[in-house]
Amino acid sequence: MIHMTETLAVQTVEGFLTPDETERLTKLLDEHLAATGWRPARPSDGLVVPGEVQEILAAGVERALPAVRRVFPSVATATPWDYHDLGPGDSIEPHLHGIGEPDKRPQRVARVAFHLQEADQGGAFYVETASSEALWTDRTAGSGSAFPPGTRFAREISHHGGPEAGAAVALARVPRTRWTSAPPARTAVVYGAQLVHGVETVRAGRLRKLITNLLSDG
Image 1 (tube, rainbow, N blue to C red):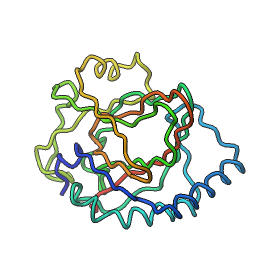
Image 2 (cartoon, helix red, strand yellow):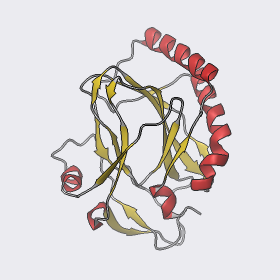
Image 3 (cartoon, helix red, strand yellow):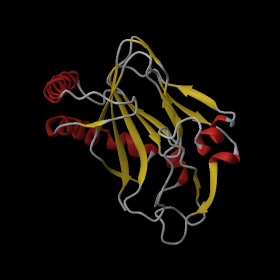
Image 4 (cartoon, helix red, strand yellow):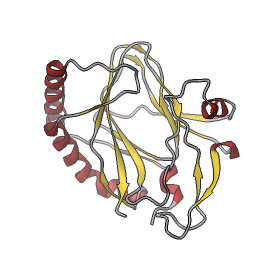
């Protein structure tokens, strides 16, 4: 059973990939991008990476699970990884995925961001915390949920809806504390599914990152 605190936690896994794995992954990814000509239409768009890249990342997840489970004990597996590529002027606005279907199994508990390349300036990943009731719905988990009965759930606040969207407007009015990360190279950042998060504006260079969801075992 998933405890709500798992969906609000943060953990890091230093050395998520080895230097050789990182070099191999970068080569495979560059070849795939050259062959497909893929370019994101907007900063939040992702590309599902090819099988060999998925295999390297899956090996990293398998090694990392003992460390991840200290903070996220219900995590069992990961979904396929997406690649994101941000350049100067790009950012990902604060948003919150939330728990869309509390009765669904398996359930998304957290997400993982692995930065393949940091921007020269800007582009920092962050999470935001707030005590405001405005971030929470009145929904609670029932007896058939993957969560303990009575667990409350945060609002879903999309980064695709634009600043005029109702949830985005509500979020903008909430006082929040931003926690910006500066992890060492080859570090994976694991963050709960009910945390507000985003990416600060890239001011120079290129930010390349890969993201997956961590799922419960049922």
